[in-house]
Image (tube, rainbow, N blue to C red):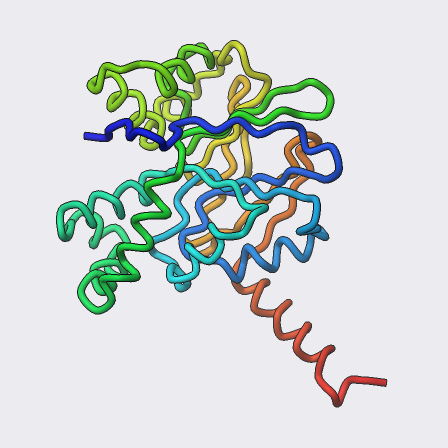
Length: 263
């Protein structure tokens, strides 16, 4: 059961970013070099831009060990995905076979070989909220959820996250938020009221698609043939890159920075 923990917000509200841009990405799955290359592509400015991550920072990919390092960056604002929750469950239970067979072998090894670092992951991941609400410069309000918003009213969803003291209700809504695929499975275009646009991940798509006011952004970066997509929230301009393209770009940058290439 997912419980509401005292002092740990289940919803975070971000104020208007008046000086910079807000970017949204999802389902990193340990592909942090790919994410870093995409930030170079968009000209990300760490002094004023913000990066929002719609969950699933870890599992299946090659650089899971970097997740905490990224969560420490002051310009990163992440939420909890189902894989992040599975990591927490694995730590609480001293291991979890379901997590291991879904890309979590690395964490099982970490718990055995470096329990202090495994605990640090748990301490950072337990602080991840289940949703973000982001104020836009033009008065728009954006939501960020990993799976889908489990209600047709954004305020009903956020009220449960913030105020509902019934542990069963909270568990049902929080679990649905990180696991739900009902809308995309049925191609349901019914909008969620009280919010302009909701960005979600969890359900891999060939390219970002919008159903009602829910925008699916997970283009399967960790899978063969997949790619990572990053989007500027207010304009919906997007950039995409595969892992092979990332390796080529990294090689090009190393070549251009080598002494032999200097003029």
